Image (tube, rainbow, N blue to C red; front, side, top):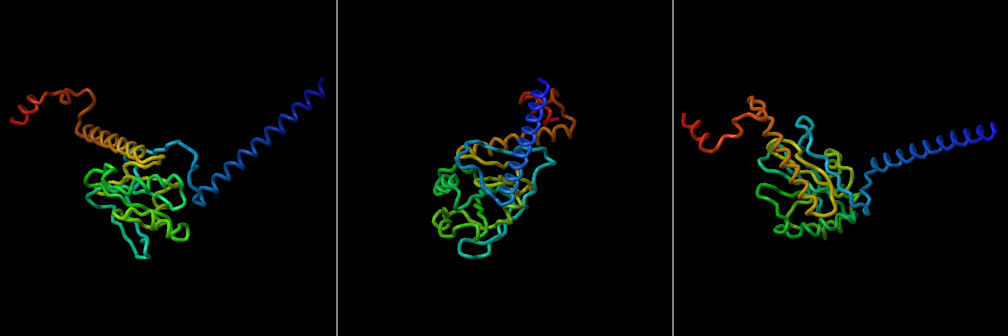
Length: 228
């Protein structure tokens, strides 16, 4: 009996070591794939949205420099502008991206508000098919080839989107999805949540805390105070 227990103990230890080794190998493979710029699993329906974050944690808005579809130098000003920019990180070889390329053909159907422009960012020419990109490009929105922009915005794969507030110089929301309505709704929700947090922070700065009676004044009361 003692021999059997000893054998089982050794077998259990060997199994534990084997599993730990496999987990380490799997983690290393994922890390290397990420470093090589591998995209998301095309069969996945998961949506990852990294927003909103604490104000101090917002990524800074960065301009995009790269090359156009006809080997022309392109510079897109983002930081310091008065409008917002939606950066769509797409590629020519991404199957999920095709739905977004198709959606972007008709700007009227996108529902983009005034003051928001769409900029499509692909990787450098050696990582893309230029002929494919030229056939996919919507025509009304700029397409910039810039692997540097992918690195600067920490893009893990395509499709990926970043909603950037030029005036504030910050990214307001970022994430991915499987369809345009899904992505746009999530980005809008994140932007609305962020605005609410900014308003709350501003109220706290002026000493207005949750439950303050001034938050529950009627329109007539506010008017009387303003007339004093």
